[in-house]
Length: 317
Image (cartoon, rainbow, N blue to C red):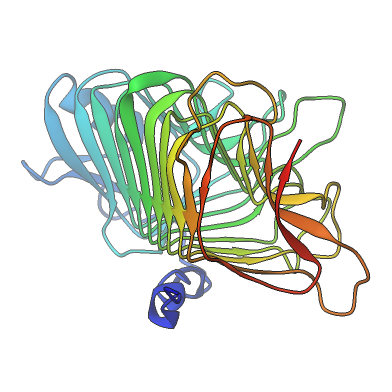
């Protein structure tokens, strides 16, 4: 059986980099610089507007940025000048997120998003409304949601080497928020990423047509009132492989770790590969759970997985 490489899990912990509190965003020089021409801007929105319908990279200075921006055109890379030290803290545009993305594509590299809260309970680091997005080496923490998307069946969301910590909620009579929640995207790829310390909802909930979820860590040991580790509520094809799952003690729903088509059967699920994963329940707790719970009624391709005591391999619901 394929084993999870410890080096991959260790690479996820950029939180340690961000733990050294950065100073307030620099005032002597511009905090946002377009790399292609060296022009600096005091507001992130001004830098985004300067790129407009073109393509460019915005280098973001170390420090706390109580700022946000909406991208409506072009292709933009939002890149930390020093990974883990540029922190977007508590300011959401359009009552949605620090970055609201509906241009022609975006990349987010090395940024930290924290303390995002809005009236509808879906305050996120990133709200993705259309087109492709690649997120690498970034940290999302202490917010209602890490990444939330609308529907774009032709686009791809890619998340790699990132951390989602202390996210999610199910309170105030509002719909739950989750660490990552995507609409019907064409493809969602999540690799070498850590999910931990959830504060409600699911860790990864996606309605993507196709998923590729590999080499990740889902550590629920310090979670509170959490639900599924992976929820594919509309069904999906693709693969869930070589991940580590540790269920916590404080669960709103501990009946399953992975759920397939629990809400609807909008997507195909036949042939969804689930293999090479390791999963355990809390030590010393006399309860049982199901590794994969399936509502799709289709034949899933569940291979060899290493399951701890109290975990049933599969249940049709």
